[in-house]
Length: 343
Ligand code: SF4
Image (cartoon, rainbow, N blue to C red; front, top):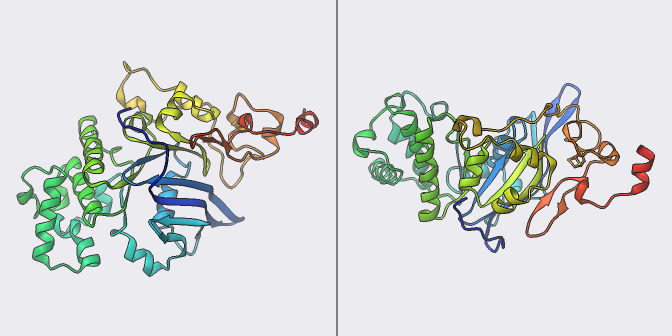
């Protein structure tokens, strides 16, 4: 854990409250995100971590206004990006903000890049859209960005096509595109998963360096707890469409308070084991089907600490102090009668 932590959120770039995303299903709406609330401080790196299907990427798509419509529906009490409520923006308003104030880097850059267009034209596209710059000026700015993100021989790489770059260089180019309009917030969705270990480390160092130099706030989505420990200031652990624990990175690793988080941390392989196995450790059982959630706590079928009330009532978030919250009855007052009746 290399970052200095400040728990007081004095300067917040993003504030999300009660985010809910639903999709229409054959048997009615399925809520894929429920009661998502978190903040991102200016210049901070905030992690979203969880197994596949926990809702990490859906949270990003909901913030970006990229949830497919009309099947999907996003609502929130607030999604405030530095004074602009994303929840109240029209599709046109969201298009104006995307790439300028909030941008996203995806896991596999080849799926985001057009194979038949030169890289500089694509990386510079947000400048054409949002700032109306001339081609010559865009090209010069892309060159600056290529230098900044450490693309070797950047001038020669401007006219390359995506397939002529290695995976690491393509991801650097995507980060350059994400940052070219100096957004307030960059969302990086598993940005290093498709890369080899050495390139992974370079890209992560680059993101930290850019955060330090440019001050961009970053939401880092990953299932790798090692990356969370190295990179993040704050962490949100997601399970079955909810945030089940949130804390600064030190508290999360020192005082994990939700049985799911404890299980994840307990099953991290030792340093002597292969790096690739640092990915999301396995906990016995399966993530529930969101269309058929168990009654009570969503984690109860896999939880060794489950109490009778856990099978009856869904827990809210317990406030453990210093911004540390856990969605678990172990930390919430509950009615003993309910337990007696249930047992
Ligand atoms: Fe386990 Fe109960 Fe806490 Fe859910 S609420 S994580 S079942 S102890």
